[in-house]
Image 1: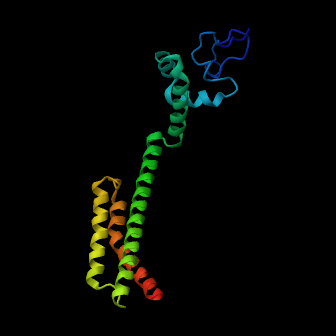
Image 2: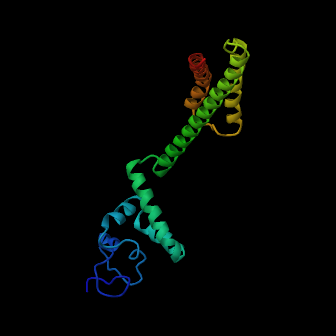
Image 3: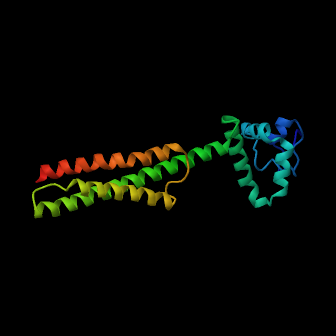
Length: 192
């Protein structure tokens, strides 16, 4: 027989034994995780980690953890082939950066909504007292409140240190707040 699989019946050797051109025995550590119909799976793991290293890793693990370890090795090997320098760490870092940017955008959107709602509330209160829009002093106070909200977000860790891009966006929050205030004032003057 050419080789026996992990079950002991005559079948094709596992992908590892086929690639390494050796006899696949019943005790083969690779056979349950690298089936013969998926040779690419072992080939890429072998190319990045080496068969002897993978064999040692699998033998040191309990049997119930080996399948997860193989999945992880295959993922990491594929990531290393796509990005030889950073591998899966590059993908993780990129995703963390995206999450951080989205958190910052969400915080800025919440601050803008809060500011607009507050301006509308103040505008309705001012409109009932007099027909004039909020004073310049009140607009400056609202701008300071939105900047204080931004610094509060930084203190609470919603905006972590992922680079200068976030700081630039935070700096433009004041400009955004001013534009938002002007837009809200224009809407209020149309409603009045």
